[in-house]
Image 1: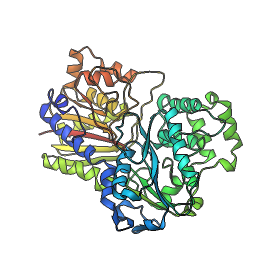
Image 2: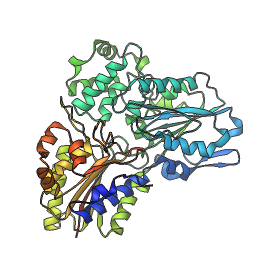
Image 3: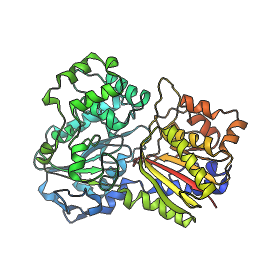
Image 4: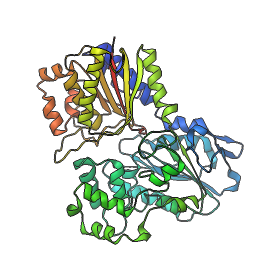
Length: 488
C-alpha cells in the first residue's frame, strides 16, 4: 500500500510530469522507512532461540558485536517496551516472531496512529508537546519493571519522537511546566531537539537512560527505529563510544548531556528568566543523584543495541534507484541539513536555478536530495504548518516561472509539524509538500500571499488548497527527506 494518499491531487496540475516523478521519488523513500521490515530482516526464531543477526544493524566498534542469541527456555518472561513515532510497526513484527514466547509489554506511539498491536499494550500520546497520555504510557511501562528479575528478557524500542512521547516529569516539576518549556524552546525559539533534550532528560524519570535502570536486572536488547550505524549527523556519526558519549535523545542508552550542558542551553536561548523557579533551583543544585546514565553505568548492564533502519541500506538506495529508473542522475547534496527551513528553501531554490541554467554544480536532468532535520522559529505566531512545508514554499518563491524544477520534502514519519489543520477532506497534519515553477502563479490566482504565509508560519492550509500538501500514512521518522528535481 502506498504511503502517499493523495497522489492524484498532487500530480494533476502545474508541471504534471515533474510532479509525478517527484511523488514517485518521495514514495520510494517513504515506503522503505519501516521498522517492521527491519525487524523481519535481522530477527528470527530458530527453535527456542531468538536471534538478532546483521552487522549492518550494529554500531561500528561495538564491544558487544556479532549475532545475539537468546534461548527463551531460560527466561521466565519476554517483555517489549518503548516509545517512538511508528513504534507499533516494530512491536508488531516482534509479536509475530516471538509468538507464544512473548509475555507482553507496553509502547507509546503518537496520536493518530492506528492501533495494530495485539498482545503489547499501546498508549497514543502527544508530540511534539507532551500531554497526559505520555505520563500514562510511562506509568504502564513502569508497571512492567516493578518485579523485574535476572530471568527476564526485555526488548526496548525507541526512536524519533521518544523525547516527547516518553515524558514523566520528576517530582516537583509538573507536566504543564514541561509542556511550557517544550513549547518555548522548540516551537517559539526553534531550538533543535538535541539542545532541548539537555534540559528535559534531566527533568524526566525515564529519559537519559533511566528507563534502562528500571530494567537493569534483566537481559536487555535495545532496538532503535532510526539509523545508528552509519549516519553522518553531528551526534550519531562515528562509532559506539562516540554515540554513547554524545547521545542526546536515545532514551535507553548512555546519555551525553550534563547539568552544565542544560545551563548553557538556558543561556543561549535566553529563557532562564522565564523558567519556573522549581526548575531553576533543580539545575542550580545539580545534585549528582539526578544525573543521567553515563557510559560506565550503561556498560554494567547486560545489553545489546541495534538500529532498525540504516539509511545506507534503505532510504538512500531507494531514492537513488528510483531516480535512475526515471532517467535522472542522483546526487546527495547534504546528508544532515540542519537549518532554518525558510532559509534552506531559499538556498535550495537558487541552487536548482543554477543547475537548470548552467548545468552546475549538478548536470541535469538530475535529482538532488537531502536528509536531516530542519527547524522553524515560530515566535508568537499560531499558524498550522511544518518545517518541510515551509521549506517548499520558500523554494517556490525562487523557482517561480521555471518549467523544469520541482521541489518536494517530507518528514518520513508522515507528520510534518504539530498538526491542527481544520479543512474538510484534509488530514490533521500534512506530511510535507510538492511545489514547482507554477506554484507562485497558482497562489496569486487564488489570492494567497506566499510571503505572508511564510511570515506567519501557516503553510498547511494554503498548500492543501493549492493541491501541494502531501497526505501520508504514519510510520517511523528517519528525519526529513528533501528532493530537488530538474527535468529534461
